[in-house]
Length: 41
Image 1 (cartoon, one colour):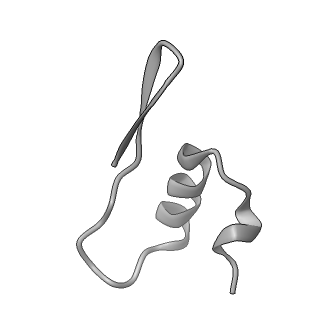
Image 2 (tube, helix red, strand yellow):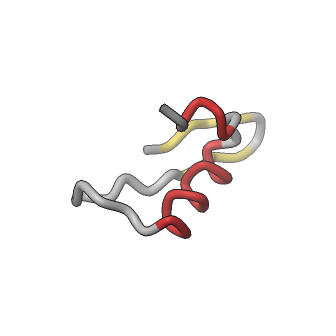
């Protein structure tokens, strides 16, 4: 996924498998610049 923001573009990977390693998920959350609580159930 990509989002244009200001003068740049933020690219977030979308893995094609169901389970993610904790480090991969953490990286995706950081790159999304969204609050971590949005990803907790």
